[in-house]
Image (cartoon, rainbow, N blue to C red; front, top):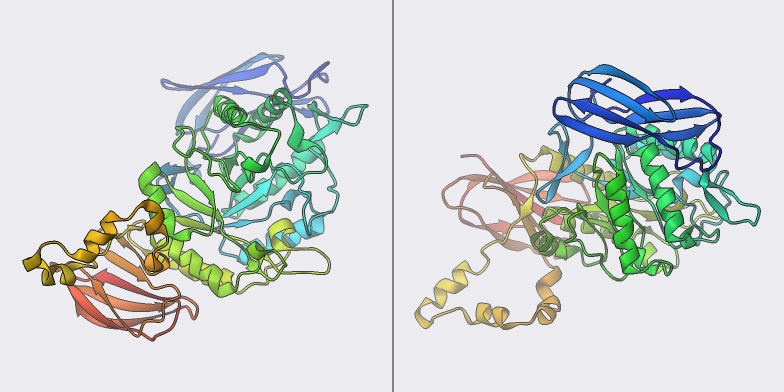
Length: 500
């Protein structure tokens, strides 16, 4: 047994007489004063499995009950796995304390493609910067995604409806194999459990059927450390479920996941209630990428912009932003300490678009995203939003007459009025304590600017061109309010690093 790695017990027996999903098989794992109750599952061909994800090193005892009776003990030793990704304040960290910054991509129907396309996608991911993939359990029907999958999650009844009590084991083996391949490359699976883009009927399961499906999924996959649960893609367009149903789904997941993987719910128009205790992070679909700091402050949780349009050239307005704009939005998001998810939708006669099926990457943003990822991993800590003291000099001018009238005006605005301010989508800033200050100017083309640094330390100031991926020293040593000479082009960031 290895810490943070799936431990499995296998038992051979007769095929279940009734439900193949809800079998009477469980195990109690104990290490010191800690206990975990886990459910086993039927894997087909007379094979039953009990899976466990050890959370700490030490000696474990286990006792299996139900269809099989067995007990034993195992010594859990260290492994190379970092464990599950967990939240830490507004950021993420692996269980072993290692740094984790999510740089995701979306390939919705990855597991529903032909093997050669899946292989090509995996090879592409080996060279890509992404360490998280959003993909679906159920097949997806939408533009550029019309192929029939080889397998479906369940077998069919005689009337043609899905029989959730009889999982298609070939499908689950196939899905699990993809998840394991991603895991071997250090890629998390942000697994989308429901969605409304459906012609097969999976979006219209009854709540009873939904719970059977979730129970089997948790029995089988929860002991894999690289999984996140995304309750849905665009939950609010699924007409079969009311809000109380989503709360019941949320509860069902929590009750059946012994390890408490990350959990979110992704919106189309209406944001889910991210303040709910079981929701670990905010999964947002919006082009309002400047609002990461606002939501971090409101929810005290990490914020991931899992969908903010795709680099591509298809007819949909959400699928034809430029490579620069994708890169620009990533920098705007990450500078404030939030996180982004890439997507790509370049038109192809064979309908193989990355966002739906995978294949190869054609866009110009991935290598720029890789550059940003390397930069953020090089910082001493995760970035936090920085409210640069912009009005310091102006305030001094108005000291004799009281408050700065411009600041007074800003304070008087309603939230709706503030949202429409011209400078709202301008530069943004983040910091790592007093060690590093980062200011990103986005689409502004300033030739001159300034940065307000602490006066009691000295900083080296560098200029980053996010498109050309260059970093050059601008000022060797400075402190306090510092004038900056910039190249007068978009996509410029300034980073100040403490040297004394």
